[in-house]
Length: 64
Image (cartoon, rainbow, N blue to C red):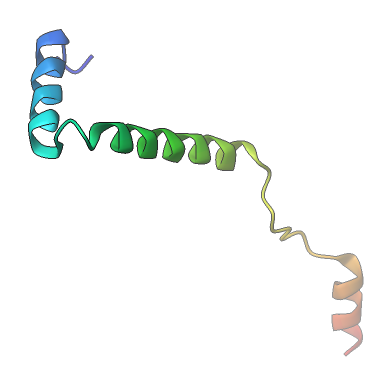
């Protein structure tokens, strides 16, 4: 997929390890996991805002 194989992934992981250090990797992984979990939860939930016009409101507006 997109020319990314095992050797390229290993190089990227080594670069990330050098930049952030071994101590920060669990924190970064946890933060990414929580972000993905929240994104999936938000995309599965129905919308909280109902924008369907209420027929009573429309009738009241017409009377005014």
